[in-house]
Image (cartoon, one colour):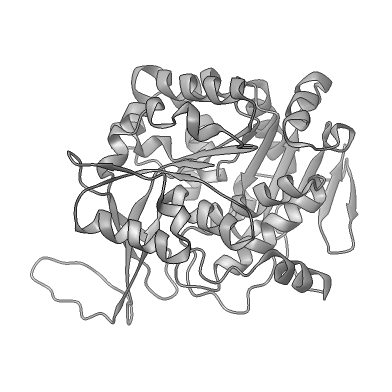
Length: 384
């Protein structure tokens, strides 16, 4: 099950740099319209990879809401069957500003996501679910209000029902209400019931290291802000809050995994999803990105990367294999304008990896106090 934030995303095709100024008309090309948010991005990625998935998000009974439901149903009628239509809410939408050669920006209306609560994840929907993934609580007021009480309540209830659990974040606007929430406290309450915590490095630094986050916002390269030691420290903070696995998205530097050294915690996680606990105990992996044929759009690629990771867990892969799979799905994602349309079925992704799909260079300093191994597809395995 993938639950949480969903929206309708509009991607106007920009013909060049787009500067919005009072009184100025900017001519653009045709717009691509797709579903967005974690429910659509990660959920549809899993569906395209061949995973049976249940989607639980909330839309309004308006034109955008009907467009979201129609878009999901056009892929598979079952994908829209558990979505919630809330007549009193408007559907969330995002206008994605993605000029050529410039980092993207967004105009976003949270809409019905603001009223999504723990009660919207109904117990009967959890029947048969092996893995529960939730995303974007910073854009869902009910989930971060009162110190994240509902976020904790939801994960505690889902965890007690038996599935493995996973949580993703999204970029935070420092000037918004959510930007002033004590997220470290919110996470410390929820993560004991979260097996996999999967933020981006920017999101994690916003919460744990504002000066480093400010450097990234000012344009610093990631390699100038973090190294292997700093990644390990950030991962240890996450694990110390209670998660079994920290999966940190590093943009074009790849995916970093760090797993708990607590045998009981790892065993409990692995038992839920059928993984070999000894393979997941105390591991550290960095999987470089795969080289895309061309980059059509990067919006939602992190969500699809996590979709690749979750699909790998359901197949029973070890940390190196799971990180490799995640990076591969993320690379497929950027080859399409919208997040999931360029992701093929998993056998096609696996064949591409097996045929020597080239990887991008990692600029992050990995240090000299660790042994760095490479598997047959170039995944870096950092062994303390």
